[in-house]
Length: 120
Image 1: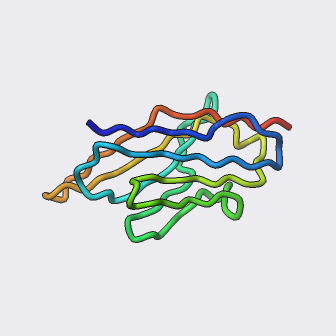
Image 2: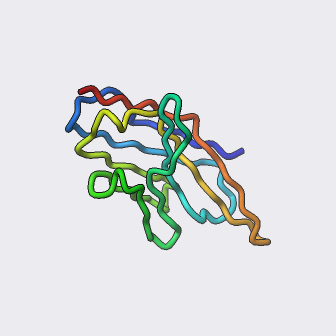
């Protein structure tokens, strides 16, 4: 059974930093990509950052230059370093993992979410 355990959320003042972690267990197929999404109250879930198996990354325009995604393949863990946080970054942040099975079939998994609150 695949489990994604997130940690690192919390309350921080504007301009501060937080680091989110997501550890995946029970993964038996190759991980194609790992990502962070967020959902603010009344808004749709949006992609924040993603990192592919080869290490390539992409970011939402709103976080470029402030957030950095990284991964530790040996630990099946993905991180999100968030600097220069703004009140508009306040949201529940979700870890997402996509695995690739032996027949090129993809499976997608989600963490339970961790709250990030940035005060002004």
